[in-house]
Image 1 (cartoon, chains in turn orange, cyan):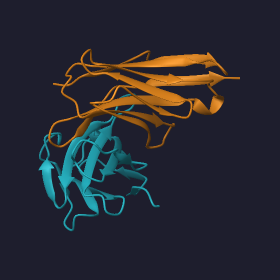
Image 2 (image 1 turned 30 degrees about the horizontal axis):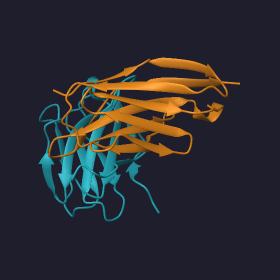
Image 3 (image 1 turned 180 degrees about the horizontal axis):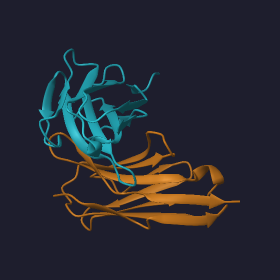
Length: 112
Length: 115
């Protein structure tokens, strides 16, 4: 059974800092890995999707890497801003249904 | 374009009642997923539709839960004899296909509270 772990569970950084969120998964037979953002009381917004054959994806200040063989991914956020404050969820897609297995998230707070 | 929409946004019901939650996927998306998110947890898979058929319902917790997608577009998640433990946010997602390559786009969710 696929299990996804995210470390740390919570993180507080001052504005402007670069930061890294970590995600690990137990079964490397994945189709892809997605990073999502979730604001309180809201749904999920997809940030980046990395196919299993790719090593990284970039979007603006975000960069996600994937090491499938070791079961790890990182989300790098450059020059953090207060608007980045949210919960970040990592999910891997597996099986014929491509269903997502999620971690429990990292709650990020960027302070002024 | 329009994203995934879900109605109602909030539903409060009493233990033992029947509820229906609706999901309107992105137009043209053939794959539709239901997930359930409890407080402080990541979403958990419930059921997956490819077109009109439920291709994988392995995440449904028991036979009180049922979902349909009769015309391959709108889906309804039905919960019979609700229990307090069913309280959670129910999320719907759609993608262009199920080949594993496409992003799943999520709706805002329905917050279900069973009193």
